[in-house]
Image (cartoon, rainbow, N blue to C red; front, side, top):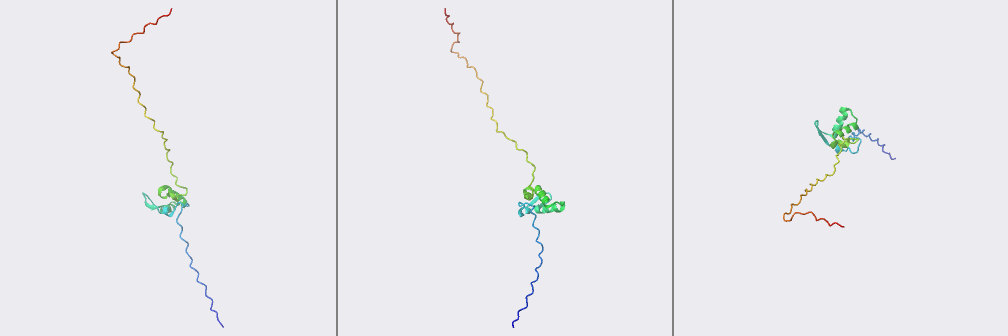
Length: 135
């Protein structure tokens, strides 16, 4: 008689994995990349990344992520503007004045004609002779 080996015990259960860390904020726009979130914006309060500024607005001003992204994007448009979901709303630029082509300079007036000097070698002109009358 051949004996079968006893069945193997089931493997121990896998340890439960902790939930994955939250994805970095993306501000609901694909232009808000990790590079933009990591960019440093400097103001009177110091140098902080766009992500840190967004997190601060969310936690201290109780704004939604999208609203915080919009606010930070508008406060630092050149650094964090790509994270503003509604795009950065800049104040309108003043209208550009329409330049007309330069007008030509006026020409100087022509010299006023002066009478020729009298010719001293010629005798003065005498009136023409009377025409013959016809009978």
